[in-house]
Image 1 (cartoon, rainbow, N blue to C red):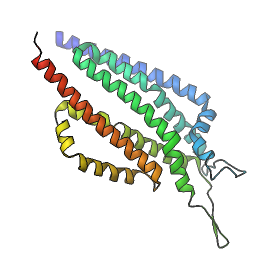
Image 2 (cartoon, one colour; image 1 turned 135 degrees about the vertical axis):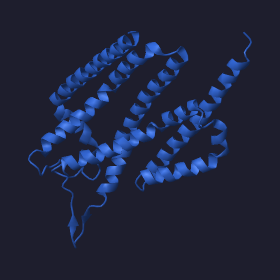
Image 3 (spheres, rainbow, N blue to C red; image 1 turned 180 degrees about the horizontal axis):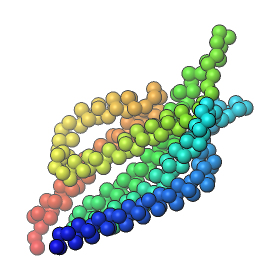
Image 4 (tube, one colour; image 1 turned 90 degrees about the vertical axis):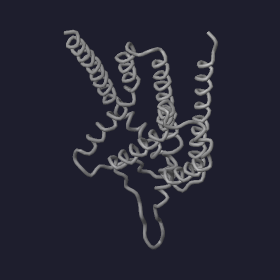
Length: 254
């Protein structure tokens, strides 16, 4: 009887939390749709203000399908709504699971949530102001204007949104990798000693990964590599710090 009541209570709580998320998302989505023109401009600003488009009279996008502009507007509103609702998602997750956790479990989840939001913000800033402009400049360099022939870009809004969203997801995945390795630390699959012994191998892999994920631009490639290297060294430091805290708690005299 108690078990059935607990199951009913949990499902009721999940339904309420999910309902809060749906309502929050719908309100945010309609607000984004109301300001869709400003959000589309904010999304397309790195392309519109690219150095290859500064002297063009007709700066903008086209759509070749009757419903393409409408669908793209919905995609952009969905994209911004999902970004704005991430703190609400973490809050609902915390309210549902936190009452059943021990204090050390809450502390670990606090680190995850705070670090996830911070890395998400840093990833968005690097994507918008550093990675996307360089990536667009690299692609726009392939325009040709010669006496023999010309290759000019007539950008479709849907194509731009797809490419930018794909790059954004890749950047965010890269910035969330420290949390994945931190989880491996807590689970005991890796430790700081293993990373220190194989530091040269990991640094070489990070350099190759930076070269694969970035266009052939030395500045952005070195920036991404230094960022990876910082995360790697920070992870080693966190592992040693966690190990020292565990040893201190083990050998502490009550």
